[in-house]
Image (cartoon, rainbow, N blue to C red; front, side, top):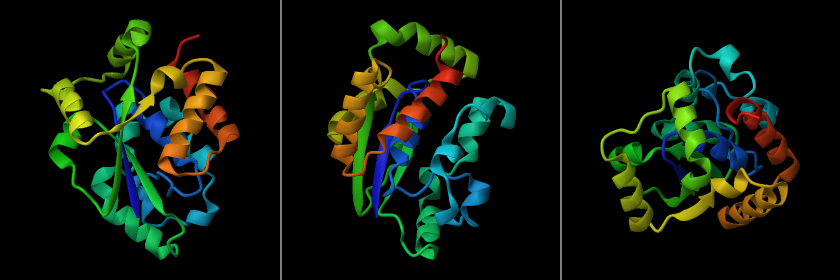
Length: 204
């Protein structure tokens, strides 16, 4: 089973990006830890599962929302769930901060690593506002880890700048990355999920 890591700095939309590409039919759903073990995969509607518009009503904080979903530390359980469901999926995807990547990363049988790029000249004020509002912080040496490991592991880029850009820029970057990951694009659902995320995270 191929494992994709999306390495991103705090506040750079890693969970949205993982879900965006996680919509593809090859990737096992990103489910909550409580739900994962009893997951009936064929019944999952990924788009409904990944919507962000109800996060503030369902969770006390954005961190609680993030922590409630299975992550890279739950790989064994995720793969066991896939096995119970007749190995319907060939891929798993996890958003991960550089700090956790430094401390937790292990090379698996098939591993691909991506890093999130963002033009801070354009989006810096938004990042800082969101970090303050949602209490995102950098841990010690986080930026240094990010720069170190994206080079050491030759991580492929995902441009959040383009995903947040025009409709044309979004579609071009989404399709480019989906092709790089060798997963099937689901552009209509991806556009809908992006709009849903923007309704919560990007002020008009």
